[in-house]
Image (cartoon, rainbow over all chains, first blue to last red; front, top):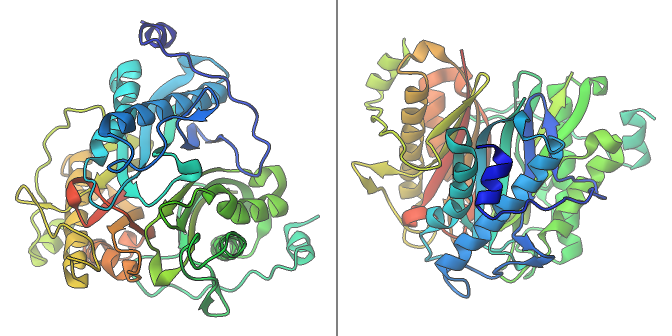
Length: 153
Length: 153
Length: 153
């Protein structure tokens, strides 16, 4: 299966990314690495499931937010490789930040919402190193933020 | 304009960095990348605007702290390239940590204090990927900590 | 002294790492870099010194947790280089996350538990860039999580 057909089979539409108009950008290429900025769970212009996991956001809602962050990571990657998925080599690392209460402990389960999506799409080449931590707060009140590093051809 | 003249025009003096005397150091070079340790907003030996943004530190004070962190990032970079700015190639990534209350949501605005300074100095080559998150606390009570990756020649 | 003899002299046994059975893995190699996932202070199957530093975990217990995280980082590295320490080139970066109260400020001291161990083992080649921050919560209630980047031969 191609990446495009796997995305279709999973019912995922990778959104188009507007060009950044700030001093920071959605991704930066260095050598064969693409460093992707921390992505929020934007969906149709809204933050999906805002709040803190363990307080106003359930575990399942946190997982869904992480999955949406991963879709937006893929949107940045697709822009970086100009839509040519044959240039994908491997996923190197995800950095997963979960806005959580001090007593929440299931951050790995939340970030699996992103890791599992990337594994489902890319298979073993999608397997990655990662860090999953619980932070005090995230931009725009998001419950999850995910940054990534990919290797491309 | 050269980097030095831009720094002058912006009224910025990049401080001299003392040699680290610990098992961690201010920067590490690997290939053509310089990985710079998380920098605090030290200014004249004091932490600028300590505390939590959203509680005792205002948005404007957080922005100023982020800008000071960026100046200290540049001090590490300048040491890494032995003062020769012609070796600067591009800024790859900033990692921005803001000590914030759980209800604070404007972390991107705070970290813009660093991103905008780097954009002002280096132009498009200064544009970078980044993550901006809100953490529970930072070393020495700082309100902002910023780490960075640069590519050099 | 070889790395193995230094580990022996420090009384450190680097544990064996089970193969990951998830979409994220303990480490990923890209070029000559090994990116190691955030490691928790697991010791004999238990999290060492869980809780928040500044509340239920003392500074000394946090330092011990960080040291244990570093041992687990080394376990991943050892697996990546198939047990051949002559392939170690240098430690590039540690990312240190401390579950802490908002008023805790000694995160660098905690993360020194990891930095000092790596410095003791590898000497100057072990000196690294790092970030040390205080987060709201960590997976499984751990007080410290540490990720790392190494360069290998």
